Image 1: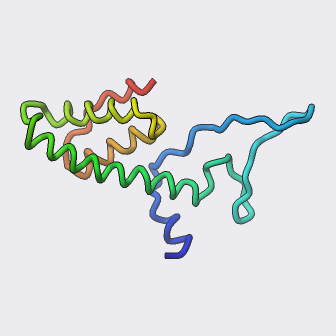
Image 2: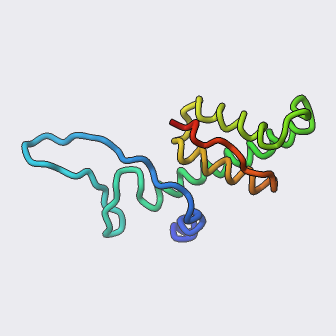
Image 3: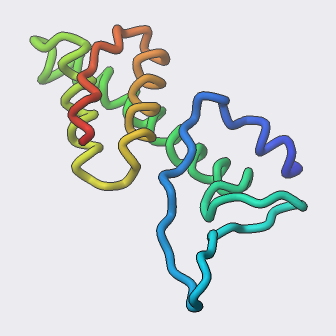
Amino acid sequence: MDTNNLISQVPHDFPLPLPTLGSIGGSQAKLLLVEYEGSFYQPGSTPLDRYARWDVCEDLAQQLKVKCLESKAGKRAHMTETEILQQYYDRLLNTGWTSPPEAKWIFLRVAALLAWPAGIEFNKET
């Protein structure tokens, strides 16, 4: 698959990465940027970088969809769909695998895949 096809798969609502902090020697102020195909981006936010992050997050969403369905049919049958989503969302935040905006996107995606209400308390991400 060519690069443009990969990049076009990233949904417009997928979050941009959090700003990257860094330092470069010298006395004048500097801005950290990366060049990609003639344009400049913050480190980690080139179109290919965004595709790579989205691919990981989409894979997590697909795996969590299955886990939520298994939980609802099994040991968490007594819980509401929102409670199940909330429990997995809180756990994902604690892993540090994603940024809080990515975790929010993942669980909005999981809720959409399952056609479950997305009544998660996202303010827990801070």
